[in-house]
Image (cartoon, rainbow, N blue to C red):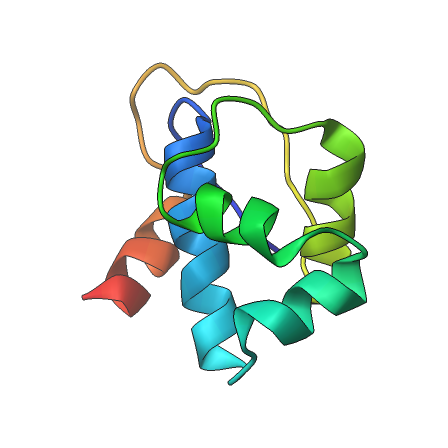
Length: 91
């Protein structure tokens, strides 16, 4: 599951996708082929140059990485257990 607990933007999403792609040892070309998008589109997303991207493409990228996008209500600034675990794993 890909949980971006603050405001979701394409730059942050692209960074996280790049991290997961690297962890799975996939090239951009391999992930783009699996997600049925252009490699240049994936490159633009991962490097913060995509100004917009359709939800269908985002969904295919996440599915190709074995990820889902989680949507939840805001919690007024208090971290959830998932937030704390994710933060611990990143550090």
